[in-house]
Length: 154
Image (cartoon, rainbow, N blue to C red; front, side):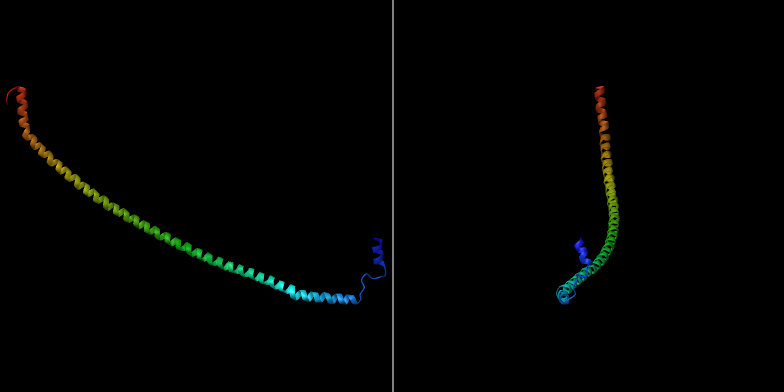
């Protein structure tokens, strides 16, 4: 450590400024300019183009997202309309079904009443016929029974 300190404190300069410094500076600037035009500038252009492409894609994505939201709102509106139409149609068809049911039930009730009335008339006629026949045969049967009971003819 003492040698390093002694070199720093000596009168001798650490860096010599001579002609090699100018040559080294010239080489540095030539290499810098060559690298700037052939490496750094194309890389910067490439990075800028990439950044612009990313921003463009973001703008496009925002636009597409906005269009998608509009389409979704339009779709939801149409679905609400279609559901409302379907509900109206269902209610109309249900009302028609209730009317048709009432008509059919009324018709069936009328036909059933007519059938029951006709059956009742037939039963009444048959009962009247049976009564008439029984009335005719009652006296004959009564005589026969009385004759058998009394063991003689009545």
